[in-house]
Length: 235
Image 1 (cartoon, rainbow, N blue to C red):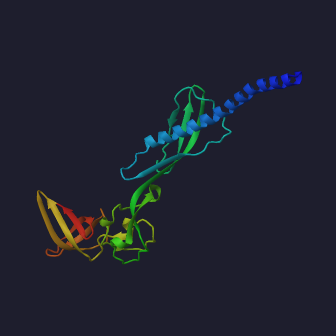
Image 2: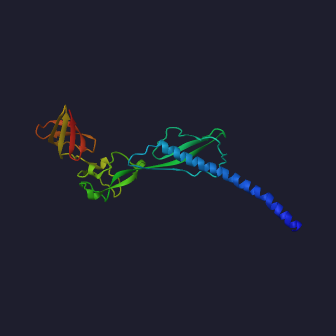
């Protein structure tokens, strides 16, 4: 083996540890970034309450690879600073006390709930049936007002304003009881349950209070809409 060959092998042997060390040094920060992201996701999953029928997904944003975070020898400290709404995007503060660094991690929260939607375009005045309603998982941050998770809750109600196909059917879009409709008035209290007929004096949706007139006595009372064509009065 020539002197030149010996020299080449020596350079290679010296260079290999340096290359290995350099690789480990560059991998360490990325491992730390991955740990920060994963820990932030798990933290949010434990903070956000998942409904029984809902679907929850949590995804931390990719952190800037230029961040030079040294490996943390202790458990990371996490918090959600300020008064943030846990229904969309939140920012998690992740801290490593021994290494004296902290980083803010944006986390995307996506919570889906089953909601009744229009299976086809709904026109004002149309009476809802099972054929023009469907159930889909809808993201909560796009939901407003009174919403429904079962078509049976609103079948037989009347559309007050046009609803596009695929849109959630909200309480303000329909009237479970419409003005001048005949309704059942259910009255209960002190162990008595009375059912009589009446006339609605205004429109209303589930859970709303309206005035109704007893058909027989002509007495006007306030009641809560508890179903399609149904008003409950407590006394």
